[in-house]
Image (cartoon, rainbow, N blue to C red; front, side):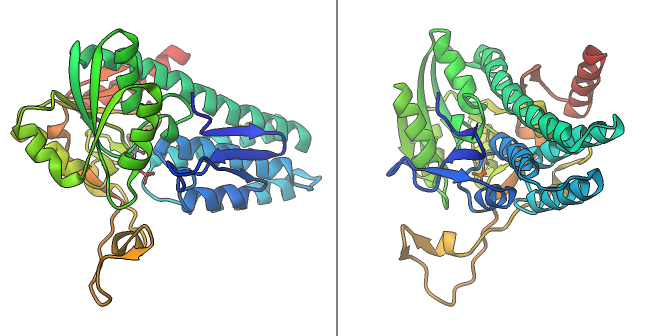
Length: 353
Ligand code: MRU
């Protein structure tokens, strides 16, 4: 298993995903601000991993606080939460993790705990968020493997693997789950311009696992499908609205449209922490726009002329009609998502009482 992110003494350590696959470097963050910068600059990325990083960053920041009274401690905590929340707007796991840490903090205050006790509970909450993500990936892998044929050629977009989670991935978790069940799987990885998560990260992970992987550029998937070389598409998600509309890496929507045209099932794999029932549909999902340089430059070389306008949205939204099923740690949900997703949360709440 890849050590994507870990708490190590007085630091949060993460593999630098900007440098892969050429270099395996680790970044040691010693403050909440350093963790926030790591999220913003894509040292760590992928919705569940961002959530885990934010939680660990908050715990780390508060551990280092010198405040002795709860009031000052709470003010510092709020500042760190605001800092984390301002890093990236689309992946809802970030806000979900911050909310969980806030709830834990509030319970500590409510119970009259000391600053040191609250520090301990924040560490525990961050570890729990991490461990739950590991377990969710496993469960998604086991449920999702059911939709993978015995001999499958699977197309994926971006990186929804171990590097994007604390565990063995969402979309890649399903692929790994299928392989564990003895299925023969060959993967096509879209290179995923402009940040190249598919070519750099997905291919790196899968090759290390010995899973056959073919990298294609983003404009090749249509031809590949037309030649009947894809049986299934599985992608991850950054935010799934209440009606099933799904924000994922830019280019996902195009893949979904192509899959539908070629009658290829298109699945989304994501934990419940990626589902945002408060957002009614895809039109309400905030889409991050990133620096123009990601588009104008490749590997440091300029490929577009000065003066050209640049549009660089990091995500797009795939309407729910294109999605054959949403694979979660609680099973596979199908349309009508507005009902099935709501029920999933109700059943989970019931199971917890
Ligand atoms: O910009 P990124 O690299 O954070 O975008 C990541 C994706 O779009 C992933 O597909 C998504 O977060 C799911 S990761 C399990």
